[in-house]
Image (cartoon, rainbow, N blue to C red; front, side, top):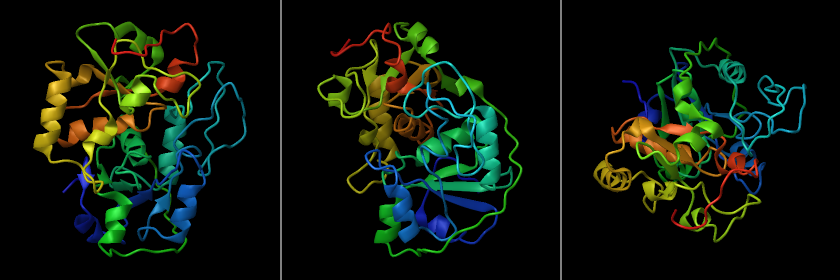
Length: 303
């Protein structure tokens, strides 16, 4: 059985040690970029490799330009004069090198997890693989917390995995840029969705980026609404009710999601796939990219 959205702990346990199952720990703290890896070294799911949001799953931030290796698996740096948001999307070449070094090929079932219900940054790796045509990838429902709470096996050993040749089948339609979003944001046939919390959407607070507010025309569906109090995804019936109310008749492939930097918004894309409503689109640069150009409009109300 191929797992494409979520996988349960009891199913993962059956495949610990299986070379054709690859597990990746994506724990990350936006306020302390080293915390996730520190926690990984202390304890993790046996066989899991650590994947860092900023060092592995993001390209170098521009305008800072470096031709040196910036990722821990095989360097991502490529030159560009355009400014970026906080977590720039990997190029095809960068992602292919990373995924090959992580030991992923067409025969591998990938499982990713973090301590935020998949939102930081397990879903980012999930979407990266889907973008490149690898559908056999799933987020661990309940995440690290449930794994520990159910006394599932853990390890503090250094994990190794042999590289494999990843063959990308890019799906460029899944990733949108700022010009795309600016063109469609007021088109009645599309919906742009902000996945951040309500207060950030309205510009009442902004703890990370220098400008508060949202993209004019965007609606708000916070990613946190996908989860229950224990970090599990809500029942499909509840999720369907919420998304159908917010998205109406708009086709899912015309729904574009963003957040602060293209990380937590993918949680909404995962939820939609999980409940069978379809595959949305990601504005990868998100809010931090949108405000990198001061000519782009900003809203701080419901408009």
